[in-house]
Figure 1: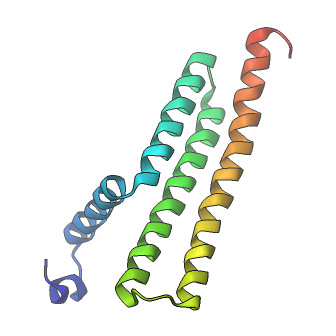
Figure 2 (figure 1 turned 60 degrees about the vertical axis):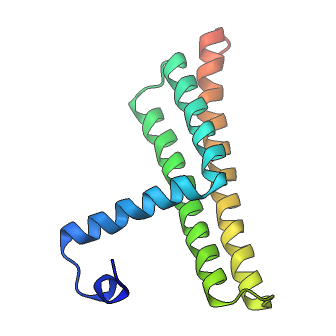
Length: 129
């Protein structure tokens, strides 16, 4: 797809094709995604094994989605920064650090929620709650 095509008014079909291409590029091109996907698999396995209810599943998937979204936004900012300037640029460094901080914030928040949800389920399973 050419640049002119990308900037022309999009049809819904084109919008979805571009979005799915972005997902593919994010999942395949970024090593951080493998760590997040491993954590996602571990959380899903634990939630299933511990019998999470609908609300707990919703909370966990909302957290997973938030972290993956933050990671994709961070990756897009990294690619944009490399396209703008390959040399050291303090403003680009700061933008990249802030984007990385957003991923860290999302991951820490997801860890807290996951610990609360799964921790309670573990306590219930052990008969301690």
